[in-house]
Image (cartoon, rainbow, N blue to C red; front, side):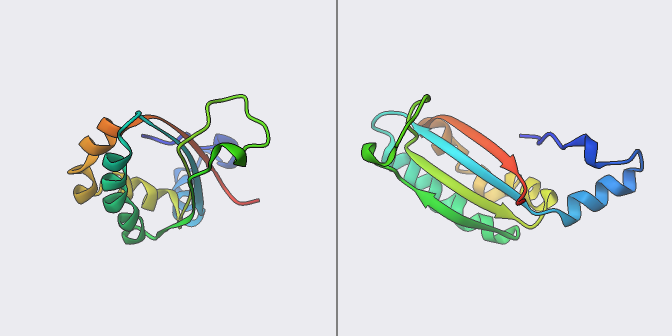
Length: 124
């Protein structure tokens, strides 16, 4: 996945973009939807992917597996898990996505995950 950067923060100087990428912490919220009966396959993938986050200056800040009563209101399907992840910068996040060990196990993710909403932002 290639992120869309908020262009309004940049001047036309390419150096400013590079500086922004290296110095701005990135926060990712994932709403993860699992295929029925594929929970154990998903957990196998997570056992590989989550530790890899640390190798790229990232941290899993929050991992929630909500039950039905945890939702006060919803207008979308309820996710199986919700993750909040932080990377020191955009470059680290992009390197995480290219991690060779993680890529070897992407077939587990493809088998088990029905859909993911990835919400990317910065701390205000």
